[in-house]
Image (cartoon, rainbow, N blue to C red):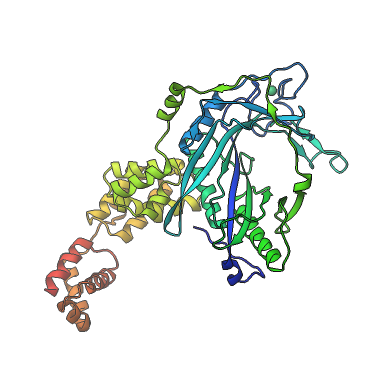
Length: 493
Ligand SMILES: [Zn+2]
């Protein structure tokens, strides 16, 4: 897990005196083709105001019609997050004035949200912690104000209504996180679950995943919460962690100098590296919520809910646990290999094609992921198929080639797409050192290291590896490691 360095006037002693309390509100754009209350496309990047109609422009006399698919996506996310999906929920109008909101209100859910009372697990510092999820509700997105890139941008603000009415799920956590690192882990796991379930593409650059944080501090051991500040505009994982760290230290600084904190909303200013006050509690919005009269309550019966539940894929946490128990890999390996569904299924295919779990995990993490990363390729575009990798691993495992040669062969496979057997045959890379040559090298190594021979004879099995390593080195990595093992053991005993 990432650790974030702090450059702060607050000493570690002061930091330790206080406990941060953090909750996150995440907006995820749901992956529907059309908007939540009309048939307009949700496609990103189209020319401004090309995906609009009287409904999403809020023209008088129009009526919203709820997109069933958006509700289904909401149910999917809610169930994956262990929430209770309410049989009956209701939309409400959230009233406020803003240029990107043509209706003058946003249709959201308020006192009757779609789902409540869930949780997700984070792993942090070797421990598993459950973070509560208060609620998940559906709402429509607003449009977008465009401040530059147009002929009169220096004197005017332009508005693009394409995003108006795009379906969102707002996921509100309990204030259960106690450090920026935990908040980072929560957002990482939440994003992974939304991706696995296909509910959102979670593309932060395109605004498909947005995050606001509630943060306060209290003296360690205190049971009451301190004054809470909402920080908005945390549109990357790094901003989130940096903004939280800044805000925690700001709170401690104020409290330590005898000041008091006020409840307010602040904005993260990334270039300046600080949060700035946006509005205080006194000026907070009164949204005058009331039930949306143009929409019926949402009814989710058990058949619908169960149908969605049955269609959920294996979730990241369950997959990690299964990889550890079924394939004998470490939790760390499992964590890396379940990062995406595509990576996890590649790994399973390598094992299915005959490679031992641990070897498959090692080769993927060292050689494959590094080369994919260097060449900017996704796992789906890997020039080496899972079966081809398994065949290469089989050559190494059987001692037909050494691990060192295996790495060279893999590099060629990655570049050319040829099979391991083909490359080994064409380039004469098979383990080619005769047993006699191995034995001669082994005798020399043993003669040169009487101290280690004594240690081995005294029962120190650990030095055996030393001898094997030295013989491999003497044969320039070309010897069959199984033969080396056998010969060294015979000569030593
Ligand atoms: Zn529309």
